[in-house]
Image 1: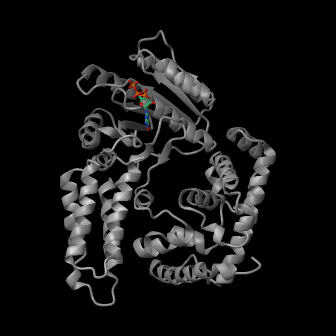
Image 2: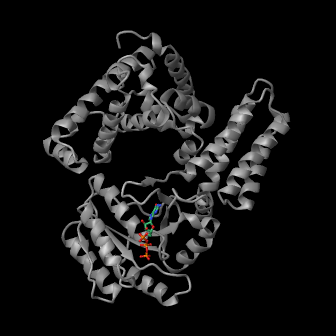
Image 3: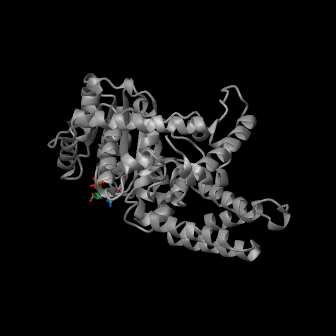
Amino acid sequence: MVLAELGGSLSKAIHRMTNAMIIDDKVLDDCLNEIARALLQADVRFNLISDMQANIRKTVNLNDIAAGHNKRKIIQQAIFDELCNMLNPGKPPCFTPKRGKTSVVMFVGLQGSGKTTTCSKYAHYHQKKGWNPALICADTFRAGAFDQLKQNAAKVKIPFYGRPMESDPVKVAVEGVERFKKENCDLIIVDTSGRHKQQAELFEEMRQVSEATKPDLVVFVMDGSIGQAAFEQARAFKQSVAVGAVIVTKMDSHAKGGGALSAVAATESPVIFIGTGEHMDEFQVFDVKPFVSRLLGMGGDLSGFIDKINQVVPMDQKPEIGQKLLEGNFTLRIMHEQFQNILKMGPFWAMVPGFSDELMPKGREKESQAKMKRYMTMMDCMTDKELDSSSPKLMNESRMMRIARGSGRNIREVMEMLEEYKRLARIWSKMKKSLKIPALSRNMNAQHMSKVQIGAMGGLQDLMKQMGSLKNI
Ligand SMILES: Nc1nc2c(ncn2[C@@H]2O[C@H](COP(=O)(O)OP(=O)(O)OP(=O)(O)O)[C@@H](O)[C@H]2O)c(=O)[nH]1
């Protein structure tokens, strides 16, 4: 995957810097030049890169850093912050669909950008979270658009509306929205015709569809392989309709992805998802800080994760992570994240007695990995509430059946996964007790909380180191 290459080059540059015996201006310059080369290769605009370098140099004045301060950490922090700034539009999405209320989301984009595929992925993503989405084909321009969306919808069992013989997209869109509102669909997705920038009449048609259906959110779908040109494209669409969010596709297949992401950020429209392949599941939520963490290889195992949080992300910016870990709320979402980390980065949990014995027994790693993937598919079919709860009692039989159906498994397997969750949660809770972390008061102010967290994180790290010697967990 192309993003992984960019991430690899960036983290290599940072590692080379952190491994240097002495951090001086030459080491810093080499590191920044290496980062600049990697970003240029990803087609990030030169101006953005040179601004980034200047900002880092301003923040990191090596001569002014007092003895005893860790220069490596200060530089890492500055690089992390600047990469985040580069991708941050400075604005949250203007609208996020809410459960229990019908939302209409209209998709626009240039021909071939991946719009139809993305509409289906977006619907499927929400369907797995328990939404009741519907798809409308208001692309009356491209022959084949109707069949493509209809087939995609059928594959994932999402209601579909379209009229292959009708040439007026406004009519089709309005009929579809009315119908799905009556059917109580909570997320109505309207796919529109792909357009070229020069086709003024198609832009006019897009405006008319928007006026008639009054979408709560207009999503601009953009092909990531166009790199920096993304900026002009996104702006042209923004001038015609009220684009509220962007989805960048084909991030798997082209070296220019970095350029596209950074250029879109400059249009002040947040990127909400990225497409990373042709398949329905190759679709990821885009959130700047976690994205940059992953890009720099900081999304690894838990001990590494805590370490990196301490090194790079100011604690007051990550209260929710610290809070989650310190309160010992081992939720299904945390289990999902950890499985993902194990599959990606190698078995951290395998170091922990109790985890290693049953979750990843020696010699049966392949089997264990397949089991984790199975469990993750089931968790993908859960609602946010279920994932964030530490009480699997929330799930009654009908929910379990739904999760089983959604993930192509049977209810016994879902119950088995919940049992595994309970087992890991028990271990987690014992680990937490042995840490003797002071309970956090919800009324603490941010500064106080940050101090407590840093202390407790240190404690956690110590524990991680001693974990091999923990008995009877
Ligand atoms: N590799 C990769 N291919 C993608 C991705 N998203 C879409 N595609 C492919 O891009 C091609 C165009 O996608 P469509 O969904 O048909 O594009 P469209 O924008 O609806 O096309 P128009 O209707 O002409 O506007 C198809 O071959 C898709 O499979 C992605 O994230 N990664």
